Image (cartoon, rainbow, N blue to C red; front, side, top):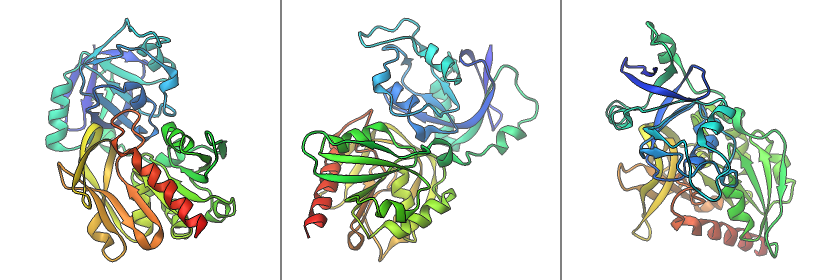
Length: 354
């Protein structure tokens, strides 16, 4: 028997899966009913122990074509793990993947109770281990640090447009999901992916028609050098930011961010378009939110979470910039808001032809 020990002292028993190592991380949960492969390969989960609320995980095995990036999460908690996947695309069982990637986990855990505790007390640290520690100070002291530096690529890469080339996009990689690139490519955009800490002058001199700010992990305020470079970029070219990119843009323009009690993770998050009055169901994965009121006179809130009222999008009309907290590229999740990529392409073409 192995254990998940929470920083508040609550302990859950379970059976080991994945790598046979002990590890501390920030305990979070995701409500996605599918897309566990996308969850496991989303760099935004760096430093976190992820609890899947859906009870059966691994039933369609591992399909490497569905990966969104590198596995950077610190642990994985499930109720039931399927050892005999059934899918014509499956290459191997999920547990084999966890072992290969060095990710420890537990099965047979009361995931519903974990979620109840997290919703009531907020996100907390936890440890996957074989022996319950008598001293919880190491668990309580853990912090997710150097998150963006740990997941961003070290070299730039180029991805050609599909079909007729329309625009050139510079994608700043704070932990980018692959489907952001694919979403741009299929709209006729060639994409150059730049490491997170690239200087603004180098990006501007590349001839890009627009700048994409990717998703990524950790506390946005930790990324002071990235924020400083964004101050030089925003306003020079059309900018579209997603998730961490949304938060970093707000900080670069003088706004503030706060940590949410337990964040938004899953493919069923309702978001209201404040201008159109329409509600979209979105895919999300974040623990921080922009404080819309901190940007009065600079930007206008465009989307709002229908559950807790937190900011889900900002418009900066004078800066040719708009950002959203949710994931319009989904992967996995609903694609209702993929139209935002069309809007970004339109902005780039308008500015090119102005």
